[in-house]
Image (cartoon, rainbow, N blue to C red; front, side, top):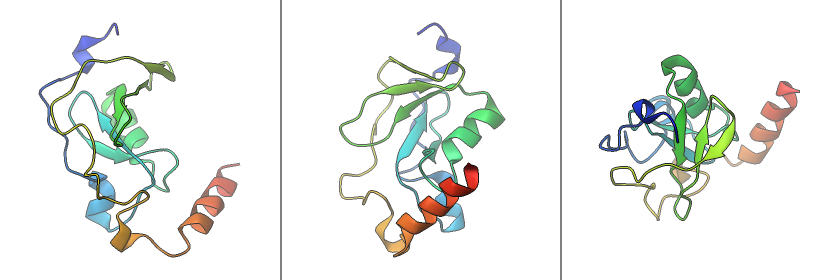
Amino acid sequence: MSSPEHIDRSAPPSGTGCQECDASGSWWVHLRRCAACGHVGCCDSSLNRHATAHARVTGHRYVQSFEPGEVWWWDYETSTVVHGPPLAPSTTHPLDQSVPGPEDRLPTDWEEQLAAARAADV
């Protein structure tokens, strides 16, 4: 990885869920953690795509999956999977947190909502 200025290994995650979805009462499919500041946002398969929005606004180019069992990184600048160093704990959302989630905010028609959002993008 050639851009260590875009990584702060000591920055803790901003929380256990998408920061913006938590604030607005929304939900997500999967979570991503910014390697520069620890911001946790929802993935591009989610309705709101907050991780990508964060990268665009801040210029923070690297995220790591915040899903249990996943260690991959993404570089928004090159749109490629990359390898990165270990980040400060915690490296995942809690194991008992539902995916998608959080369970108490997940609408019964979440799959239909995602399909409609994808159709609108085409």
